[in-house]
Amino acid sequence: MLLLLLLLLLLLLLLVLLLLPPLAMLRQQQSQGPRWSWLAGLQHRVAWAVLCWAAAWQQRRLEQSSLHVGQSQRQTLRWCLKEAQGPRCPLTESTDMTTFRNHLPLTKASQAQEEESGERLLPPTSNQHHGEASLQATLLGLAALNKAYPEVLAPGGMACVTPTSPWPHPLPWPWHALSQVTHPASKAPGALLLEALRSPGLRALEARTAVELLDVFLGLEANGEKLAEAIAAGNPGAPLPRRAAELREALEQGPRGLALRLWPKMQVAVTLDAGGQAEAVAALGALWCQGLAFFSPAYAASGGVMGLNLWPEQPHGVYVLTPGAPLIELLPVKEGDREEAAATILLAEAQKGKEYELVLTDHASLTRCCLGDVVQVVGAYNQCPVVRFVGRLGQTLSVRGEDMREDVFFEALGRAVVQWPGAKLLDHGCVESSILDSSGGSAPHYEVFVALRGLRNLSEENRDKLDHCLQEVSPCYKSLRFRGSVGPARVHLVGQGAFRELREALAACPSSCFPPEMPRVLRHRHLARLLQSRVLS
Image 1 (cartoon, rainbow, N blue to C red):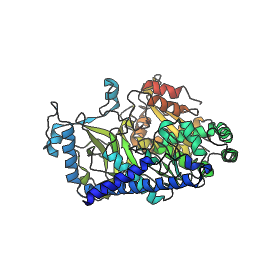
Image 2 (image 1 turned 90 degrees about the vertical axis):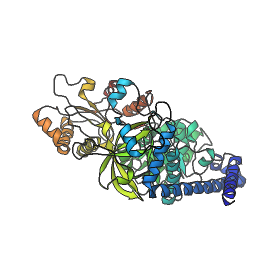
Image 3 (image 1 turned 180 degrees about the vertical axis):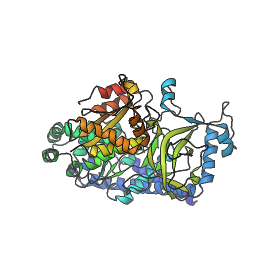
Image 4 (image 1 turned 90 degrees about the horizontal axis):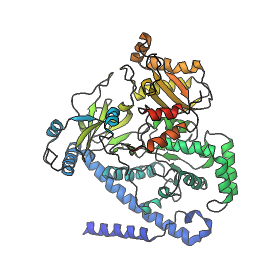
């Protein structure tokens, strides 16, 4: 009877929400009067009550599953096998984990396999993988964000500036009444930014990924005067000449701290961590979003949500690997050469301080696929490992078998940029010389394309510093350079907008998937040529 009453109460709350008119824009206008303000307040209170109930329900599910990880993963395995049942499925729902591993060998989602077959080992998830893990990440992420920044989810406190939200599971319209000024699904990026600029009281900005938020701020600088004119003229909405003047004044003072000058109450930027985003977060934090926190509700990879972020106050994202679907295994990574170990382990067996490659079971085709995402265990949530993401094995550079990892290369590039006077790194991409046929009879080498702020030209001395830094961080690379087997890295400065064009080209690819991971090593010649065509020096 109690459960029935709770269900009836929930249905009643949802009905009230659905009957209330969409007031997100109306409550921004002063002329609507106290009646609309009262309805908007009621709408927000009801929406928040439903969110709290749903988040508490998901929190209980997480506690139960994370306290009994082994049992939870066995249940997930049974679910995967049940979903995959058919004439091609060699296993039954009663299969244990050992038999499952023995019957299904590991496969690798290597770039070479994708280019040769034209297919992905894991299907693209352009629908944002609307599953239990995505819903859990969204609800618990909203609850955690509200706990850390209580005023962010107040009416009109948050605006999304990209057409797609960073929350892994899109919620029905009533949920947008909680905080958002704009409804991103039906609007272009320029219109979304314009509406956000009209709201000086914002406390949070949303963007699907950090690289897309970087594009938004670069576009804001490039088109600032047009945006100011539109705001002053009231296109759309009422004319706001004073707000237009504030925008012009804020832009005149330069990029550093621009977000807080435009929105003095701003506290946090919400973006989805999807691989290759750290560079954009660093650039935003050093310039436009200086003084703001960054929060990613989840870490997502091809195939779905891998981990939940329950700690918005952490400066660098850490995530709980959950035992629910999709089924996650961990492949121990050996130190040094990172060759794979003989067998995978389950979540409860993970050891603090160790590095592992994520292995995901795709229930549609029943394959155990090594994703290439490497994590380091930094703690535990009950019996579940808490991890930080280190890098992607698919983004390794190797012209002579040196296997320059993504995180190692980024460390070297960061050391070099610090030595370039006045420079701030915005974006970079790497290409092995064989892709561009640029060796010209010389030793194979790396072609590195960088987008910088504060530096318009690179001297030969500055270019050479990257190669020296690569030798400092990689003894293998240093040995190959000493023997002449590998040539010096060649650094190219590209113009503004080059990496935005690269992302547009990537999004147009048939194999484009959600989330839109940012590649740092380009394997396709046409993408490398795109950056090459935008070289300034």
